[in-house]
Image (cartoon, rainbow, N blue to C red):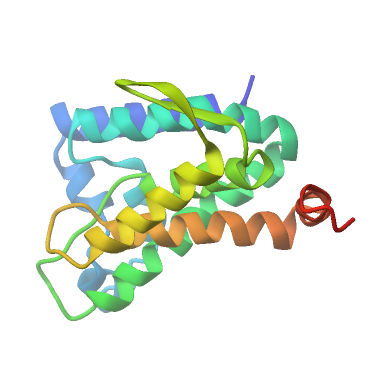
Length: 197
């Protein structure tokens, strides 16, 4: 059984417990950069990725992980996949940690950063694989989807809102970096697709 499914189950169980049974789970698990630094509660960089602010937030992240996680995990193996996922959680938290370190009111939560790392790891290996979105019956090449996603995230990050677009961007960037730096065949695979190998 894929590690991906265990990650989805862990996210669902912890998030649903926090949303419907013990709200303290979300309060303690979320990352509040001011609290993280002042209390040295560095665990928040990980625990914040297993709590979500709503069922729709949880569903969006887990559906994405469900479709792309197993394919990528099969290509790079369980150990590398876990490495990508958990370092993706940490790397995607760093921009928020730095930007909001002096703001006691700011909090962020959700697996989006790790999920984007997985999604962009997939895009690196399968740039021309079609990705289908709801209400759009035509598949969008993965690379084109990735570029559009990053473009939108950069644009949206300049506006105030509740979505942590910086985590999306950092997670995506980390996914590409991790694959090229730590997955032995990924760099050669990219060179081969470019006709340079």
